[in-house]
Image (cartoon, rainbow, N blue to C red):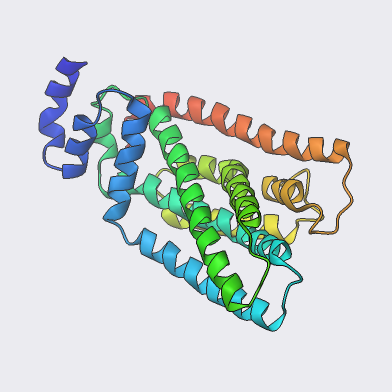
Length: 273
């Protein structure tokens, strides 16, 4: 392994991001890859775009709740959570497209083949990074919701309700990325076509949100929204229907993993040109 890294050194010293990947390769590979994604994201404008969208969303929801008061803090954050859960898939999809296609834009993907890291592992590292990003986004929204509740004069903000808020939003953060696996697959298959991947992400997210009542069981986003917000959507679902929704999400995750493994084995022979 050390010999391979030394042999590939001339190809990666010209780019700081490549050099950082090599230096971080020791130890737990997945952790190092995720840390590298965070370090690369700091140098991009994507994080500011996401922050701007979240702040605009927060201002809009605060204005709405101020003029249409909720009965209590639980109703307040449940309503906020249902809408942020519809926005989250689109944000996560765009973030994944950005960090995946950055390898093509920065011309780092060919040099990464010189390092003994399977491309599928890089793909999964980016997905794990996305889960962590979702957790960070939702924790930030927890703080924004408390500020919004104070502005809207919600009085029953207790420590217990705050813990329930955090638990509920963490559930959303760790659940919604599973509904975006088809977009992850399309992004990998598109091989650097940002416009196509972004268009698919927008249509896929919009269809899953609008068709939450009619596409549940067929569309992972619709299925996940029904699992998380069945009561808020005023939908009466049985245990059998909930199981069908879970199977729908798991099925697309399995299809994505299988296709990605096959794709990277075939693509490696073409050296990602």
